[in-house]
Length: 212
Length: 212
DNA sequence: CTCCTATCTTGACAGTGTCAGGATATGGGC
DNA sequence: GCCCATATCCTGACACTGTCAAGATAGGAG
Image (tube, rainbow over the protein chains, first blue to last red):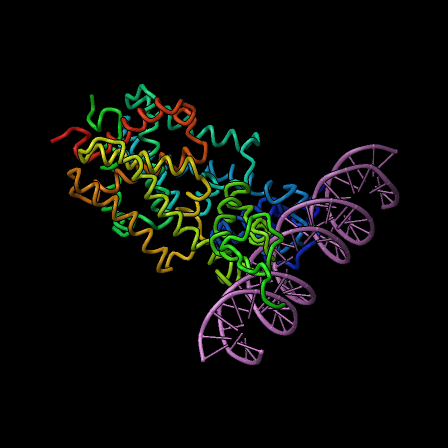
């Protein structure tokens, strides 16, 4: 490109601009719209056409970027797994540095994510719509799994049972709380809830929560 | 149409009979067809018209018995919760009679149900389609919850944390195994898997699995 | 025997995902 | 500075879905 021509369009060309034919970053806009749509209308009310409308494009526009609805949800799930790991990392950064505390923190992050984005959580763990053989999604989900395995090992876990126990507790808490079923815990104020979750997760640790 | 016509139709009028105008027990037939449809096409591929076709009736026939799709799935969920409790009862009948063993057995039944009917399990715990304020469904789900609470109390649990810990472990194991995510456990032969699940659930018991 | 009511069917409508074909803008080659 | 290959996006169509309205049929009460 030559000189200072006022050409360099901002990546997102004014949200309120008279919509140009070419969106600029439609792929990202569709992913954001899809997540908003999921959060608002739920997994089962999700509609591809509605996502397109929310992004301000025609009903067939998503096809070029994602192929079909499964493709969009696959990409969204991959992004979701990365945010899922990030939520765990955020808790870990605030916790003590010993392995047990780090593992418990990851569990709290697991629950944080499920409570903050319940429908996205379901997309990751219970939906059949994403293509879990997709390379990108597979890598993202494996990264989350590896993180768990590593942390359990650091905390002294040596068996499959150790990994499964911690995973199951964190996942069960996250799923039941996200679905609003475990009201005895879900209705507690944040601090009390965190304390209770910590106690519960610690119970499942390889060493029974006691440092060796 | 006069008299001696071979009129007296059996309640379920020969599955292969030239379908009469009145089915006889369409409500039950639709529930069975719906469960089969869920098992075969999954939660997200579920179609009311397809259920009607499977039951051999017109696409609008379910409306009279269930109102709409939500109504059908609500009734199916209530039935599902009863089967869910029955699966736990089946395991309990085979277990030792001490409270801890009974509680562990209920957990194994929890997982049994999820593995045998994964989509129905999802309908009970993660779907938004049933109307969970429906009286019958509410009663069925509360019965399942009460059963858990009672068993935890019998096993020496005194706090909310005790209940939540056992529930979360059983639910997490069930959900992850039903979704095929926890392969390290799911790929074990039945006996070894049961042994591992028992060890994991026992870990979460109020007394740490040790009889007081 | 008649009629009332529950049961089931047919037909229509709006909304959905996907495909085919046409319109439009972008950037690289000249 | 111009032009066109290509990526991007739109319009229109199809089969399928859930739901509603209106009609057909059967069972049972009187």
